Image (cartoon, rainbow, N blue to C red; front, side):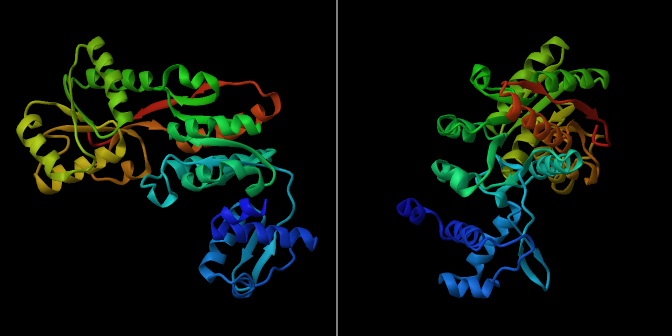
Length: 350
């Protein structure tokens, strides 16, 4: 056990030591803990390392902090902890708001309904490195929710099953029969494709260019290709390295400009990049010269000028539903498949 402990990152070791300190001294709720400087001296590590460990324990609701007063033992809770694993390797690499909307929705539902489980943010690289010690690191662990990032889910599947830790996946339904093995909450990519095609048809946008920047958008594009045929729309996808400005400008000027009615960018992140680049650097007027549409409806979509038409995947409400449904799953152990609601929000870019 000591060998396993020593293999953990230093800040993880500090977390476990603080937990043991609370437990061994049987500290009551609201008992004050030693200061960060005291813990730093006690454990022979930097204050920054101590602070990271304490921040993680605050996220787990083991302790809480009061500005100017110190850090204290949190009230005991019997709620099971559900780890929310993002699709990016590190939280700091998450450039979109959808994961945090999802987590906040889950947290809101926990408080609103006083659910028997509560969400905890983890870094996916920390999670994958610590698979064999999850129950040691997260006492009272109830399960794991994977936010998109199917590969993370598959990498962890065998270990979680062996340990008897329930888990589920939230994201696009583009992985075939693989996902029949575990509980899922999907945004239906076929419905997204049909919704977009129907909208373009009604707007009389018959020539559509797709912008592919990732594996998921490639699969989304293939489904839209099928929907476009059903609606008698002309569709051509263009695969570009993500946010490579010169490549996109050349492709637009040589192949897209004047030949298409609209750009279907397949994610809001790409659509926002495209709109800013076209208007600021190429003098293209949106939507007068060409319309632009995205998928996700992240907060920036509405703040952009012109604001972005998008198919909304409401991650906040999906996070609420996921935790509520996962709580039921913890009780009945019945694998489930659910689909989230989708809606198209028309704004000024089309």
